[in-house]
Image 1 (cartoon, rainbow, N blue to C red):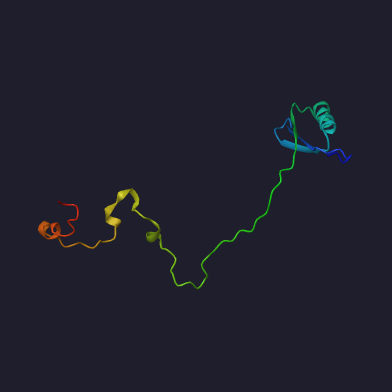
Image 2: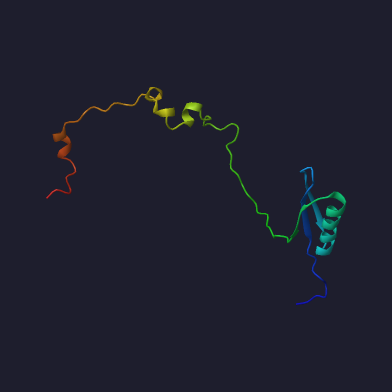
Length: 118
């Protein structure tokens, strides 16, 4: 489908000045970009220049929701000790005391739930 209008393809000239400073120039067409590179070379002694075709990439904006706790929430902020799941370097001295279970004789446990025995 030809509308009779020529599609414009912009070009970007990326170059580095002799002092090392990067430079950029946007041109409306490739001929303008080539003329700019010639001017850079002949007048400013730039030897490092490249020309790139630029094409717009279509993007979409979508709504994004982020949920945060209100300032007056009842759950306290985690402390530094709560944030770590393990002590650094496996130091057992930093572990919270754990509940000690009373030992149960093997005979008392062995009689329960014997579904897989024949």
